[in-house]
Amino acid sequence: MSLQGKVALVTGGSRGIGQAVVLALADAGAAVALCARHGEAAAEAAKAVEARGGQALGMAADVGRTEDAERLITTCLDRFGRLDILVNNAGITRDGLILRMKDEDWDQVLSVNLDGAFRCTRAALRPMLKQKQGGRIINISSVVGSMGNIGQANYVASKAGLMGLTRALAREVASRAITVNAVAPGFIQTEMTAGLSDQVKQAQRAQIPLGRFGTAQEVAAVVTFLASDGAGYITGQVIHVNGGMWLS
Image (tube, rainbow, N blue to C red):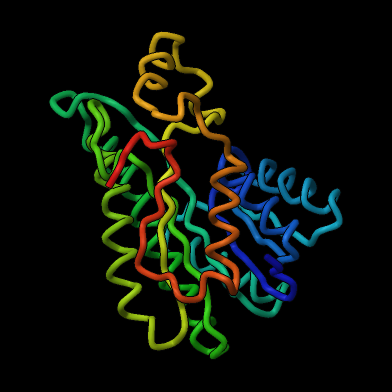
């Protein structure tokens, strides 16, 4: 799956699944721009790509802000001259039972996870359409967007919303050879899940038919395929990477 000559932008690309996606796309030959909330983290992630012989650009941004989303696209174009692949991965959690959930906990999660994907996509579509060479938009959703989860009403709503955004946008831009798909990871070993108790991890593992947690690299492999020419006839789909935790 060669991505030589392609340029990708990955939001939330400094750690976990996002970092694995950045490295996988770069290893496939793409130049990769990435963002994180903190510039130091973004710069370190870019250096990791360059250490492997790739091209990368790290930027600080809050994708929930329109001006930041648009600046990401403009800066990417200034550096690499084009944009072919957008991976909307940036996401946060503010867990809590809904009766105790504060307005700001709801608003912050939706702002980053869903509004951020909308704002980055809107900005990215302009150069993709102007290039007239198609494009790839890949949204990182979650298994909980399909099955729900106690104490995560805000996160679940944002991830389910990404699935709906994916399907709607896929219909809008299909005539321009731009595909839009979502990847919905299940329980993946990342920094975000590392802090969970052994009891919680055991309970989660018991729900997975394959009997293990996934890796960020396994998610990144699916994203890389969807970004490739080989996935040119796939659009509007939600690809679950969850070891059988959710069977649709």
